Image (cartoon, rainbow, N blue to C red; front, side):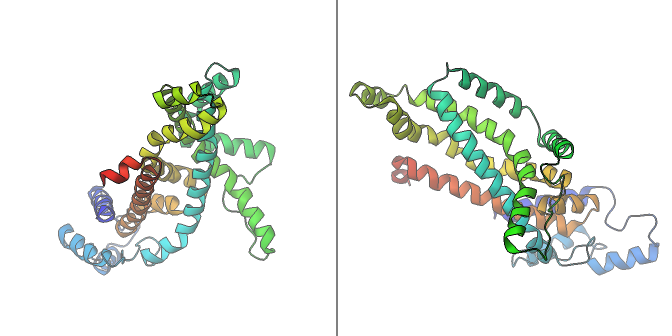
Length: 303
């Protein structure tokens, strides 16, 4: 249901934009009229929407007016790169934001905790567009990483192709992950600081439990709830940021496909891309609920 609602909203917004896919003045009016009839764009929008909705239920999102290919085929080609980029970004977010937040929240007066807080404040304030441009400039100046796109030689050996994919993935994943990891670090640090004031943690320390064990075995588990509660939002942030990152860094994913759909006012393609994004968001929310049930038995009993 969420998928259809989001896709319908995208379809409606693209329809409300001035013109359509064949409003280019360089196109012959007769050719434009024939193309509108072919794609059903000459009918009232309600009829167009109901026809599209009937096909979308069986995952048929129509044909792209820009690429002249089925939307389902285009999504199947572009989903794997977006999944790879999103998973890599989430791994960076979790591996950086969570442990740095736990360490900084447990010992906030240490110099490295202050340095981490300062870096987090900096990265939180940098949008994905600026982060992407800064990393592209770094790549162009140093030559350490490919400056954009997925640079893989299809005729190269498998190991070399994997290494090229990883090298091409590093910059887009960092551009997408660093601002979100900074937000997670700040939230995790505050949650750990609150958890250490819980009576159960104080009691464990009073019984002689080592501080490190109390932090990582007990306070860490308690502090995970706020982070897991917004995991769906984190996934949504990864998706919303991936559009900018994919376009700037020429990553061949769904974000770039959505940009082409909006630029060319491709009604069917925009709806299909929005539907794919909403599926990822729904999966993120589901994983968030599962994680909360694992760390907090009260959630399971409430269900």
